Image (cartoon, rainbow, N blue to C red; front, side, top):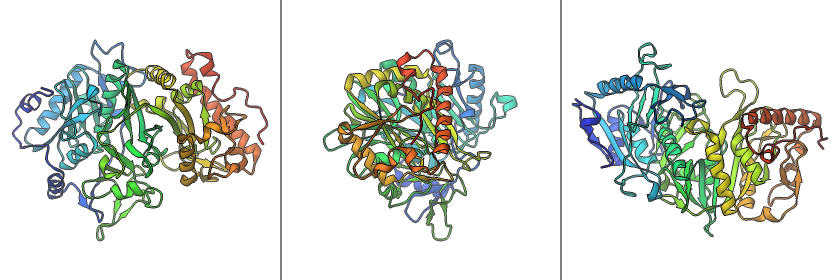
Length: 529
């Protein structure tokens, strides 16, 4: 059996257990219990309160003798088995008399690597969320191998003085007992990303590259991957009406090709429009879950432009709500990889082709930037470097994933591009964001091979190969300095960001020299013009 009995998991439980309820019943129960509201589009809208995003400072891994020398502890917080036992007892006692909702499904669409997943929820709406985000049992029968169980009790809060946590919220992964505790936070993304962290531990041990990326497939079966941190365009750019969507966020790359870890999508909603993202817009209907999207209480219409609740408003829906999707999501080996960055300094080129060494450099760098005004205290753009474009979800050291990427790119002759979906003509607040229509055309040119046959110009500061031409994109914007009126201001901003890259990459000093030297020029004194 993939899972033990509920009596062993929740000893003494006296409430009702609702097992794998269908979507309409979960929506109905969420409404009856006052957990959310129906919107004009038919989606279920919920508000998650204090926590409107992940809480990385409250995530822990239980340290056991087997894991002590294996986990990337500089990136992961450890907690003792004794503290875990206390929190587990607290969650069990909290749920003892409550009705719970149980989902049993899978993670990983390649049957050779499928992980059984069980989620026990306090709330019906969160059970709907996991039902839509993971692979449902009608698509893949959970294999007869050990799985992982999430106990999600948002109303169960920790006392740091007693429970050994940093706040009332806690997300605790116990690899030995194969249990994840989630308490204190109502944000559903904690459950999704916890399973991703588990797969980021299990898959590399089988020489499978686990990846924080979206994936799609063309009519000629060519597969593309889109890596990027939140807000860079992974979901938007992979939802292409001319290509089949494999998945929007989490994938593995094994001997059979790429496979989706999930069965649904989790799209950012801020500034969502039908014009720019029609497939995502149309997917927000009955069965979808909206977190923290502002809604008019009378008309039930949604205001995607409002950040009154959070900038991180989200929509969760099953992947088959996207018309041209593959479920369960599998594809061949990638022909093209795209690293996405939203550069708010406005200095990176909108597209550049990367050498294998540069692919390693920018994968380990995982660069994007936070915007002024999106977080308290941020008054100008701030560089963010997240190894492998997903450091918060990596239990193992980054070089484990980077070496796997290097080997697979070499084996399958995969081309790699860096695409900037951020600003040009100046930093955020001065310049303008690169048109999504232009970005889509650049992506198309990269995927269809057009950029394999054009001339390239080396950027004088970032050492990047920039195409001289791209169909449907003005030549004048391909070199970013051409979009700035003040060339000296551009040079200073570009050199500043280049310095940030060097400072961040210093922690990878054991990388081969050709990788280290493939980053921005260390002496960025060339004239820009």
